[in-house]
Image 1 (cartoon, helix red, strand yellow):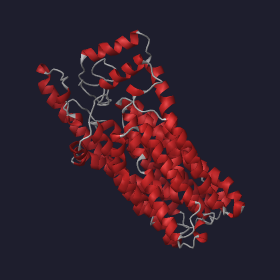
Image 2 (image 1 turned 90 degrees about the vertical axis):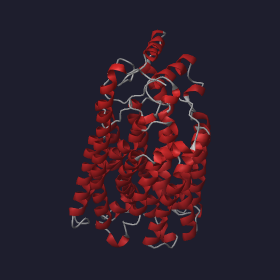
Image 3 (image 1 turned 180 degrees about the vertical axis):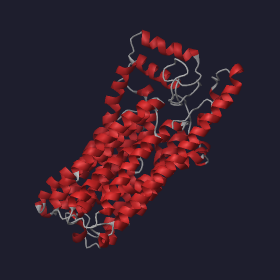
Image 4 (image 1 turned 30 degrees about the vertical axis):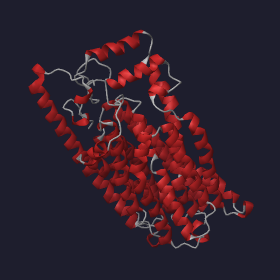
Length: 499
């Protein structure tokens, strides 16, 4: 296999390279350019065919998991006879299901195909989400939330792995961030939809909150059936690419990563991820973001309502912070990609969120000064979403070996969502309207995120320097290794990590 590289500045003129590459690969790429294959045009084609499809699925996923926050202020808890703490338990069960089924779902994806597995998952959670609208008691609420987490668990890590088989390392972070921006977009759409759907109260004898679940769940099912036709599999089997385009994609990935390897599933490759300390640090970096991420998305309507607004106005006031978060997520992705850095932008973005929570905590009388707390919400959303997108895209850049990367992605989400499990218990009704317990934990977690990301930055930089020294010592007699069996993934001395 050709030498695999990072996304530092090139040491050679090979497309996407930043290390020693085989000259035959360079010649192959130049051949496709000479016959009229335009790389930028091809990338635009891939973006238009791949990103909207998976982003729509993730938007629906985040909408179906977080619309419970909109339903709550429309009377969900009262109608089902739930106490505030029982409602929080239901939120926790979602993440328990999510964590338990995360890695198994990615293993199933590896052993099937994206076109089959991603739409099938979407149908499954769409059915579960719809059933939430006809739940009659507390036990039903608990069961549905658990299985909603179980069925949604495979989408995000599955899509991250899927995109890694289409794009070069240096191209993945921006695409994953754009894909993740659907989460904040879902928050904005959720507010708009909840505001409109809630006016259907008493239609068919159903409360407005029931229609929120039913209509949004049915929408998910309809889109999922269509997804069997608009989700693609892999480059070598896709019909909307020409033979030359398939070959060009194969060569550019071969020059950059492991995406073209015919890697068979083995449990040994799964355990390789568990033995790598860096994979655990990626998980911890998301763990420290998941608590503020999910507490904000699950409790924002309640936080705003408790500032003194009506339920209807609270639904609408959730839209601007999410809209700002969506815009900044894309901007941070572009700038981070331009400078080929992740850690400093994550730390800066998390600092913005810290400012937001300091404002929220410092406002001693939120109902008297609601505007101050609302400004804090803007800072929190503006920092949390861009930072989370960058954190989640990091392993896709840095983990080599298809099964190891799929496992690492699932590990990151599983470890991360343990933070969400804790977060769902923090915003207790007794602490309203200041919610000092929840805001305080979010603030502390964001501070820990900066520390973890700083450690990971140091670890990756040190390993890059160590490999530079080893390659420098051996440079005089070094020759590229092209035999497939000699490639060692991200443990290979030629691999460089994105910091």
